[in-house]
Image (cartoon, rainbow, N blue to C red; front, side, top):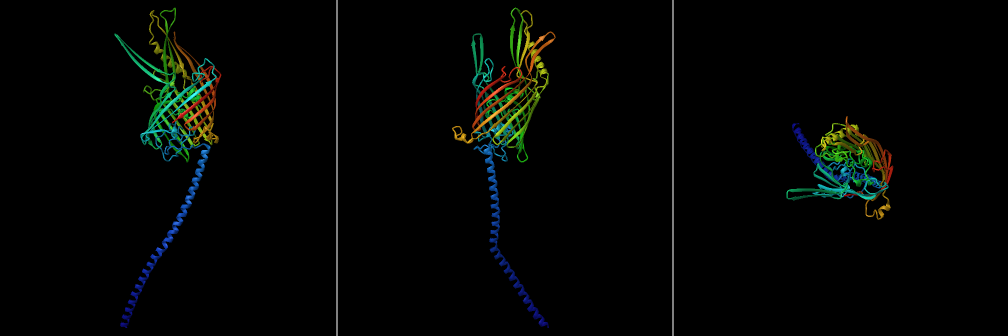
Length: 592
């Protein structure tokens, strides 16, 4: 039994070991077969996976191609409608999206890669980068593109039916006017720093200075002569530096364009399709200072996106501000038959000026502009100005306040652009009295005594440059950008990529309430005798013309204009006594 049992255990032990050996062999075979199967199956599995992935990729590529085709068709439609102007300029310059001008308009230094790289024609909408709207033009680059030179200019020929004996705008019945030539430099020494300047030569032919010194026994003579053409001017139009403390936001300081209305910011002659500036901004200025109105100060400029396609641009400055300035001419008048008696006449011309760049005026003004562009079709903007305009030697503190609204909108080839401005000078009567009294007291204190002991009398006569209690006005342009096929095939448009004919109509109107003039101040027994005249003036102007643009920075213009007096004794512009004037103006503007 025991032997059997031992034998059976031995047999069973042997069989168990054999079973484990067989099981181990089977496991090894299974593993081997699995590995072989894996090696054989994996390629097919990978191929199936890759095939599925490639199918997804092809599907995605097809969707991308379809999206790109749709985008191409959309851009073609925009080009056909005139909303996008093709350009071969270097990509990467995105400072032209208006909003800009929309001077402007904010003229930021940073070139944001996230913004669309659109280059717009002079009539296209821009938001706040006014200085940069000319970005599509062929600027001259220096110092590894850190400094760019550009400029613009214009010439005008004018003839009209103003009767003889009246002063007319150009100085002759039919003559040419060299309107202006402006040179600009735009420097970016570092990524977030920008320095910009503009020097303007307006109606300037020459300016010559000569000094001579003559010496003789017992005497010396000094002579200085300055020669130049009448009406010529050389001036600093802009000169500012800017530091961007964040993307699309910066601080700017220097001589800046006051951001009231759109014309003052976008006043470059090559931008416009009529060769004369508006009544509201220049010829019968509702602005406190006629365009281009600049001032010295500092402020913030910037922009930020709103929604999917909207944009808000802003500018705000603290400024020295506009103030009354004057020129005085002395004249000594004697009366025959009255020995020892004479009259000192002081002729004073008084006007609002903003040229206080020497620190002689406190910074008492603030100006701002906010523009909203819902899309690339246009923008709507509100702006304003508030400050004290009394010079330091008078006691009155009347406020100067201006509000403006402007817009631009484009649909297909049609375009409308306009502006409305309101300005109040407060109680102008008190201003005239205070100013005149200060000038009179100054002149009286220097009166000489006559040889007979009688005091010379003093009379102050003041001429005011269209100063009025309140003034307001508006202008509106309507135009169409035509790109007919025959134009490109003709000698006019041949070899140009996008020549245009732009018919345009402009209507404008101004109201000047309480225009003060003929101010005369003299001494009286009980004090001062002050007299002046006031009247309300109202005028409108309609202009119809056409502009030919072979390229966006060059225009040949022709227009008919009619100025009509509605209220008052004379036209505001031109300053004639006629009820209406008619004129033909031809112009050429250019930029580089």
